[in-house]
Length: 636
Image 1 (cartoon, one colour):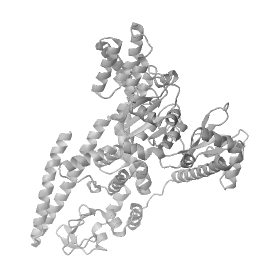
Image 2 (cartoon, rainbow, N blue to C red; image 1 turned 120 degrees about the vertical axis):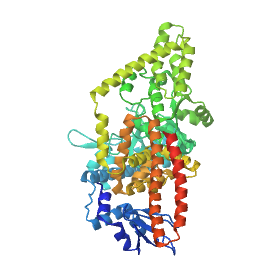
Image 3 (cartoon, rainbow, N blue to C red; image 1 turned 90 degrees about the vertical axis):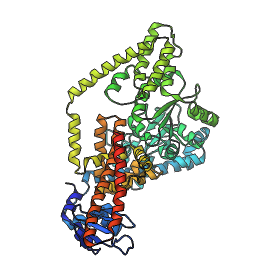
Image 4 (cartoon, rainbow, N blue to C red; image 1 turned 60 degrees about the horizontal axis):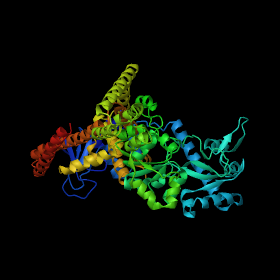
C-alpha cells in the first residue's frame, strides 16, 4: 500500500469535507453547495464508498481527499501530503541521505564551473596574456556577441592560477578536483588541468555549465581539444554541445544537424543556423540519439567527404555486426545509424561536405552553400551504398561478394519493409546480380541472429519475469493505469495521437480526471504543461516541476515502461498505450454513470426534479461509451 492509499484508508473523506462544506446525507451519498463556484442548488456530491467527490454543476471538478485539500487551500501535492499524513498519523520518509548529498554536491560543482567560466571569460576579454587567444578567436571569425552568448574564455598559461583564484572565492579544493578543473598528483598536490587554452563551456539541456571543452592554442600542443573528465554532473556520452542553444530551433523544425566540432557549432549559430549541435567523443551514443529524438524526427549527420571520413562512417560494417546483434550500441557508422533509425522511428540523413572542408569553413565561406548541402542530404543507406561501391571494380565477382557481405546486414536492418526492398533492388542493379542472391544472404544472417538470440535466452531465461515482478512490487496503483501514464510520458506523440482520435469522435481530450490515482493525475497534469512549453526539454521540466514527493512514483512508472520496452517493439507499445488511454476513459465514464444512477435513485426517493438532468447526462455518457467500445475494438 502506498503512502497516499494508507492516508485515504485512515481518513474519511465525508468527515474531512464536512469541516468546510455543510453536507446533507442523500441516500448513499452526501450533497452540498460546491465550494469552488457560486451556486444556489446543491451539485457538490461526496461518494463515501469510493472516497471521492464531484461537482455536477458549473465547475465540473472532482477528485479525492488530496485534490480537495489542494484546491481548497491552494497547496501543492507535497504540502497536502504532509498535512494529511500528519492528520492520519502516517510517517513520511525523508529523502535518503545519499540522494540529498548527491543533489547538494551537484549544485556545488555547477556553481564552481559557473564561477570558473566567468573567470575564464574575463581573462579572454581583458588579460594581457590572452592577446594571442583574442587573435585566434578573431581569425576564426567569431564575433563578440558569439563570445558572450556561448561564454568563451581563456585559461592562462599557468599551473595554479585557476586554483588560486577559485580558492580565494571560497570554493573547496576537493570540489575543484571533482569538477575536473584540477588534476590531483600522486603526492596529493594539485595543478590546473587547463592551461593556455581557449575555454568553451559545455552546458546541459537546461543551460547549466557542466564542463569545458578546451582548444589548444599552440600548434604542437596535444591533444588539440581537451574535455573535462567524467564527473557526477558531466558525461560526454550523454550530452551534446550546443543543445541548450539549439533546442528551440530543433523542436520548431523537427530537424537537427549533428557536426563533430565545437567551432562548427559556434560558426553555425553565429550565421543563424540554430539547429546545429555537436557530438562529444568519436561516436554518437544511444543516450545522445534518444535525447535528440525528444526534439526532432529528422537527423542530418555532417560528415567529411575525404577518404578518412568515409572510412570512419563505414567503420566496422562487418566486424560490428556481432556487437550490434548482441547489444544496441550504435556508433558513427552506417549500419549503426540504420539500425537505430528504425528503433528511433526517425529519419537519418548524411550531409557530404566539400573535399577538405569542415562545416566551419563552409559556413564562413558561403552560408547559402551550407543551406544547400542540408537540403541535399541523402538517406544514410543511400550514402552507405555509394561509399561502399565507389572506386571499386563492380565486375569483379570477389568485390561483389565483399560488398554484399558489407551492405547486406545494413539493408536487412532497415525497419520499413518497402524501404528495405527498395534498397535491396537498388544494390542488386548496381552489382548486376539477381535479387535472390541478396535474399539468400539475408536468410543466412537471420538464421545466425536467431541462434545467437536463442543462446542468450537460454543464459537468462527468467530475466523478463523478474523485471515484471520488480515493477509490481513498486506500486499499488492499477497496473493498466500505470502503464498508460508511462506510455504517455515515454512516447510524447502518443498524447497528440490520443487527443486527435478522441476529438474525431466528439470526445474531450485526455485529462487528469481520466486517472483514478491522485499521484497519476498530478503527474499527468504536469506532463501536459511540460509538453505545452518550449523553453526546456519536457522530461527535464517534468522532473524539476514535479513535487519531490512524486518523483519515486515517476521513477517507478518509467521503470515499468523500460521493462515492457525490453520485450516489445515500439509499434506494439504505442498501440497498447493508445488502447490503455481509451480504456481509462471508458472506465471513467462507467464510474461516473454509476454515480449518476445513485443520484437518480436518491432524487426519485426525495422527489427531486434534478433527476431529469442526470438522465440526460447518462444518455450522453452512454453514447460516448459506445463510441469508445468501437474505438477500442478497432485499436486491437
